[in-house]
Structure formats: structure tokens, C-alpha cells
Image (tube, rainbow, N blue to C red):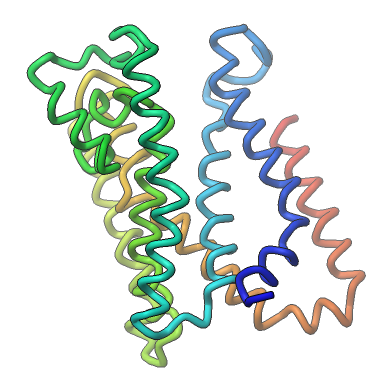
Length: 258
């Protein structure tokens, strides 16, 4: 069993967390359609389930691939990640084109003149770089998160090297750069009074689905993995702390719902 397989075997306990995060996202999309959980405020942050997935992805990849260093290992990592995402994405993209009417392929009224650009950007998972709601959610709307994940994977070897650098300036770049980008985009959205969602540039396309912003979630997951490496021996010797932290997290989760 190689290092990656060993890491995956030890992280099976995170599967249950994936379920709850996926349920969170399902409820977000089902709520307006079926009028469920109407007692919760409309601003309730169900979309944060996606944030959790991005953080978890950064944690798991760092846990499994933290030792890659050679160009051969980096290429193998990229090929493996691309093979996991792109073929399946292409299958569902063309399945959607063949099976669904135009009103479902372009829920945000994409102009016919932009059809070719939308198709090409979706083919290569670049749609979220256009900062355009029509483009980002065309054809297969959930694929926006896959486009972001592909960018995270492309940056992972470099980000890993920066985090492992002995120079503090380099260590903080993976957090400082996307944090600054987030602040700039949020500030611009406020100054220009961009709508939360619209048929063009919006808060959603500029911030929520923007890879330069969402990579902050992924990089925070990487940091959590490094913290885990440094503290796991201590927590293994003091297992009662694990239960205490789990209880605290459960209470915080319940407090959010109340």
C-alpha cells in the first residue's frame, strides 16, 4: 500500500462529514423549490457547505501528498487529479446538452452570441474565470465548483512548497494574496453596489465563484493539515481533548441553527 492509499484509509472517518456538507448544499437548492425549512432566515448560509468541501479538499490532499517534491511526482499528481475530474465533467456536460432544453442550459438568459465562449470555457473548466453569472452557471451550473477545484489542484504543488518554505514571507503568501484579492473584490462590489445575483457581473460571480477568492478556503484546509501533523501526537496521548473539541463543535453547530 502506497502513501496515498494509507492516507485515504486513515481518513475514512471524514466520510460522514462529507455527507452532512452535501446535505447542506442539497437543502440550499431544494429550499426554494419545495418550501422546506421556511422558518430559517432567507440569509441562512447553506452555501457554506461548498466552503467546507473546499477546506476538506485542501486538508486531505495535504495529508496524502505532503511529501511530493520532484517534477515526476508533481506531474503524476496533476495527471491523477485531471483524470478524476475532467472525463466525468465532459460526460455530464454533453449529457446536459443532449438531454436538456435551452432554458435549463442557460438559466440566466445567456445571449446566443456568447454560446461559443460559454461552451469553450465549460469544456476546459474556465467558466468561473469570466466573472459572469451567465457563463459561470451555463450548461451544468454545479460544475463551477469543479472548475475551482481544478485551479486548486494546479496550484497545489506550488502552494505546498510555499507553506513548507523556511522564509516567513513565502509561507504567508498563500493566505495573504487571496485574502487581499477577496478584500479588493468585496470592496469593489460595495462601491459599485453590485447586486447579489444578476445576469452579468454580480457579487456571486465576482466573489462567491471566483477561483482567486475561493482558493483561500482550500489553502486554509492545507494549514489545518499542517497543524494536525504537529499536534496529532499530543492529541493521541490526551484523547479526552478530542471528545471535548467534538462536543464544542457540536454545540456551536446547534447554536447556529437556533
